[in-house]
Length: 132
Image (cartoon, rainbow, N blue to C red; front, side):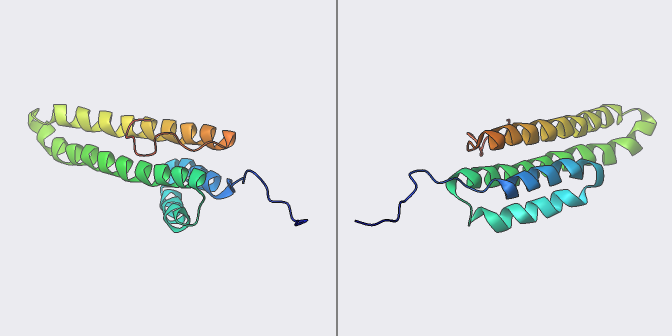
């Protein structure tokens, strides 16, 4: 018999995903910390346990989905503003502003939902889902 006892359940370190969620939310004010959070998630996803790996996957997808939609909204603004001088571009400007605002709200909601699951110690249930 061995005197060394093995734990029945392992707990994973939640610190790094929590830091990345914080960097993402802070990045709404400056933008740079979102990129730092992305790099941290890419760097630590492979060495994370299965529960925290779902959070890193979720964070990485949140970044890329939000960037994609933000670029679409920005392009609508870029092409709509000059065309709005002849009133043709006003719908494009309005749609671009709406998309960019909706992406910002969506980003915050995803981060808050991730923090809630992280605080509970649970894996993110649908890391590949594009909604929430």
